[in-house]
Length: 293
Image (cartoon, rainbow, N blue to C red; front, side, top):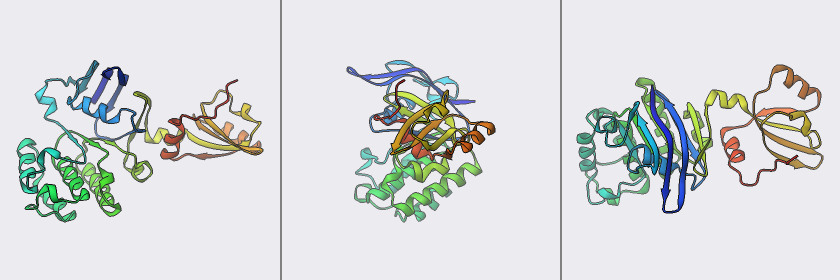
């Protein structure tokens, strides 16, 4: 089942085109990474998915139904950011009581476990919490809501390293018990890479790449060889090239057969897999060093 689908979605703010004709779909039961540089359109896209923003063009579908003004499917969506400014005058217990009322599938036992985990007292005033504990409240709501679709917009950076590790472990544990659909917007790519089943990279309001992590790992390479031998990668998707004297590194997003790998070894070329973060940096760089022939 397609849990989220964007069909020709564009979003304008005045003359600024933030999202440009997006077409993609996300299948159920996965943790999806939403990556992009600052200003790429990640937050705008998440706001369109939950219908806080209405696309200027195109349509968003949730659980294979049009999302806009569809109470049934919107009740299955939870969108959390790192702050709940509207609740600054509330106590923690009142915020969670409201969330429990709003989300019928609320997991009370998990909520209590998470409050203990992040050392949060229910009678505390939200406004007086540290940034990390405010972030934890958002995470608690997202994990305990019971919704089929949960959107997290870059909220983990408010936690310290221990708090983030606790969240990662809990997310994987909950996903193992009962798979749901998470979309995680983040800049902590290297740290969070082990969570993801699928990756979407936005660049200047467009989908630059959408790929299952397993396939992505099989197609992301850094090749080191002589600088004048770019012809050996003829027909391959070379993203960038970095020269280092007589040697060069080639950043490639493509597949290599066993025969091709053996031929590269014979020519003194080493082929290594790129990390997700390395691929992201190369793919979204404004200073690619690909030579135009």
